[in-house]
Amino acid sequence: MIDLSETINICLQMVEKKFDKGSSEHWSTLDFENLANEIHSKSGTLLSVSTLKRIWGRVNHNVKPNQTTLNALAKYLGFEDWIAFLKSQKLSERNIERKNAVGNKTIVLFVFVLIVLGVFFLFKNKGSDTVQPLEKKEYSFESKVVSDDIPNTVVFKYDASKAPEGTKVEIQQSWDKRKRSAVKKEDSIATSIYYRPGYFKAKLVINDTIVKEDDVYIPTKNWLGLIETNPEPIYLDPQDIYKNDFLSIDRETVSKYVMDSQKQKNWVGLYNVREFGELYIDDFEMETLVQNTWKHGPGICQNIRIAILYDGGAVVVPLGKKGCSAELSIMSVDDKIIDGKTNDLSSFGVYYDEFVNVVCKSKNGQLKFTINKDQVFTIDIPKRHKKIIGIVYNFEGSGSIKKLEFKKDNTILFQEKFKNK
Image (tube, rainbow, N blue to C red; front, side, top):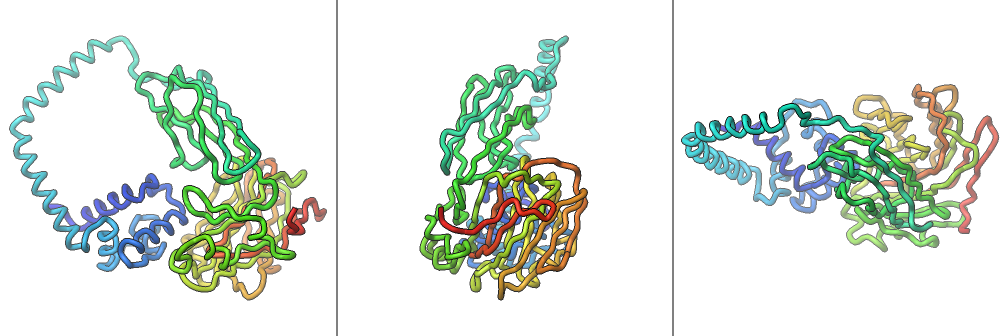
């Protein structure tokens, strides 16, 4: 008989398949937020991100899901409630038992056939290697963008003709394994649409092994405002984001483009992807003034993520409302994650009555974070002399930027005036 733990695991696997975002091992906090919203729309029950992370084992916790959570998961899958889901599994179990009873009568014959086939292929392939190691030098991969605007189609030219027969050949748009597209080894051209600006490491992947990489750089002409819907964002006009001497995506703008914006969690983004002079990730200082302006409805933690983009990665500085620091995480150099679940990031919890002053400084192998003039966190980082090529602000709900400066050795190399150009 299937026990409760096994049944819960089956339910989670079915939810994972329906959500269709790849393995939960690679889900980000934003993915869990999107899942919570989908479950809410199907079941009427809003599960927290921390609850979903606990039941998926992303946070150490031994307590089983309560009945409300189980009912919500079952309704998301199309069942009336958890009891109905349990009944379906018991029915499946009886069907399996009947099939096994029939199957046992033919198992001897099946094993005999397998043995015969195994002997046949053993002699057929004797003296040859069935698995050949991949020689990365036998493959080529390069890319080009087709315009200077966004969205932008990228043309990939590749040679995977030396891949063994039956090999899975894919092109991956960036670091995200979910953004892989299957291509034919016999072809040489494939295209992908990039809906967001940034600096990406595209990859040619053979049987889940990365054999080649190429840089895809999609800059912005100036500041670009987005409402972060998937897969295609909503692009905002300049007049939607420039507000006198600061940038802002306010709740009125979100409501203009998103139906039921007060009932569902939304993220917005302000992008400026460009070179900021001779600034490198191992020696810079970024100072900014930011404010989350979302007050009501989903998104009450008022999270902000500031991503400083560099050649090959990003440093992400988080902020959130006081009391919400457990949901925050820092991304350091080489994609190292400092999670608020296992680290004290409470100093990144703030009040948004006024603009919050944030400083991120890299010097002598350390990243130092300062919030409202108080140094709150320090991280040791490896030596990476990589150029800074952009900055992205993401706000949960809505938000504003009043100041942005990049310095090196106390000399200002870039200062933003927030004037529409």
